[in-house]
Length: 285
Image (tube, rainbow, N blue to C red; front, side, top):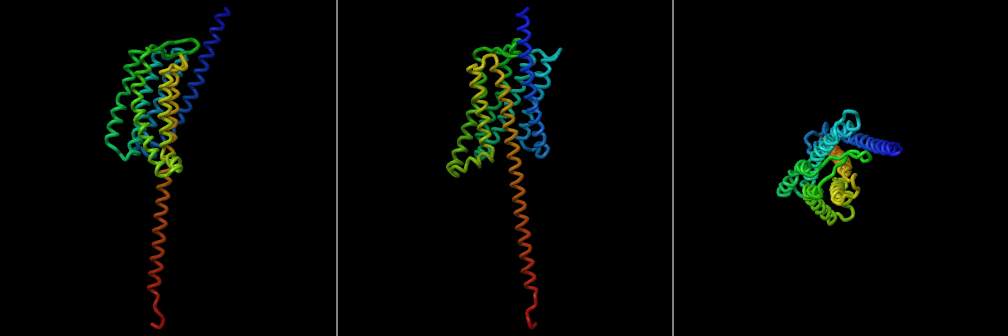
């Protein structure tokens, strides 16, 4: 009886912790999706705005359709939860890498070879679904809930899919940072932060840290949760960076227009004064 009670308490604790985590993640994804929709409404032709929306909305779909109902009677099985997570991660990874590629492409003087290489590195992301099907087994534990057990090669397959684009983007951003530092010195950090380069570096670092932790299986059964945490971190960073860039460009455009309008008004006033001066008749005429 005592053993059964302890098992029930352990299961209840695990379920409640998972529910708290799911609700927290859902709130963040809802907020990020709302911000992404606002960006889309203001500027629907921007790739970054669509990337932010797709990545954050995929998180809402996963949490609302799989992770949260999993704890309800008649909810999706552990197998469906895992497949929902992997599918959402594939969509999010491709969206995030597309935004990173666009930023790196623009920062490197629109190099077409770099763009082509980046596209070729992003395309294999859906291979994660195949690798998951072959090497991952969904497992349910009363204390840990739904998690995955995988072949020893699975983290390396994941590393092989994610590492090349991360390395390329890291190199691209490092080159930009070096150029800016040579040109502006210590002032470059403010400029880079304004242009979103620092945020892009943080996104790449988050992805890389998640990959390394999964390869090393740092947290045991709970290590796979890092994929969701990385999903949450990267989408939040990208949404905030995109918002700041859009706002700064709007302010810069407004300032430029105001300056142009002021210059035109000043020129008109000067022209009017000169015309009035010319039209005044000379004395004695």
